[in-house]
Length: 367
Image (cartoon, rainbow, N blue to C red):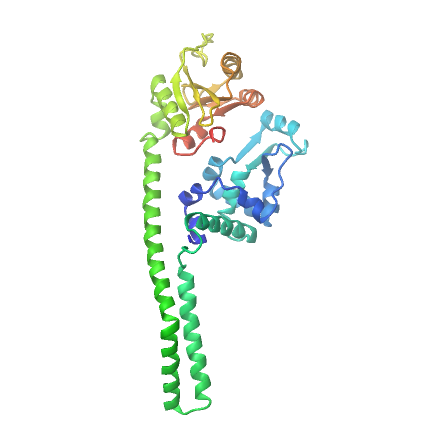
């Protein structure tokens, strides 16, 4: 069985079991906001029975990993829209941090000083062990071997002390030899079996580490050599191919370019998205949902405007009846554009989210 410390230290191991959110309710009921999806920072602190500062410190230290698992901070019009459809106090502050169940599970694998988090980790590891080792074939842990050796030493010392109380030094040596002989016939075979099982476990862990390293290298290989600098240097066609590759990596099928193009209106600042600066992709998600993607290749200092999103909504929803609509750009979105995307069910993949997606994270809407 994998030790609990591996989850605390290995991002790769955490990512491999990040979908097992059922572990949260197995340990303790997790309350959600009225949207049935999110929880606030205070709700996470209440669940793990720790202070707000502990959760905020964890987010600060592991923000990129948590954002890859659904953590985000709402501000401006996006926060206002969320307050209208949730149970959040409408007079709350100017920003609101939201966690998904997947993010809360991620926090459970990072918190060191929470009894509830430790129980969640143990449940995850026990479930992993039950899946990988059928009943009766599960290897003995290192701790079992160590505890058994300590128990043996304690029993020997106790037996010798009892013999010394009744016999002289010579008889004590005879008694010690007798105790060791009995133990050698009964317990040592069990120890030998435990050592062999421990060796098998170590070999299996080495194979798992090599496989995780191979997967990590493969994921990193999909990210351009110079990160977002390389993305910025792409042509529109190369950017479209890069986004199409990310979709296919996450299980989408039949992802190809389509002929839908908006004419753009020319505003003195270059063409609007939907004109020369963008291309579109069509395909299906792994579960069969219709997928439409707009690849907005513009300079990183520019912003996607609400009009750009409105054009895409008309094309994706009305013309193609998209179940999943992605607006992908290496730039950022205005607050109005983000608000419009949320209201029309469009996933706005901005620069920071694209960087995480290119680095191996999976978009929540494609899972």
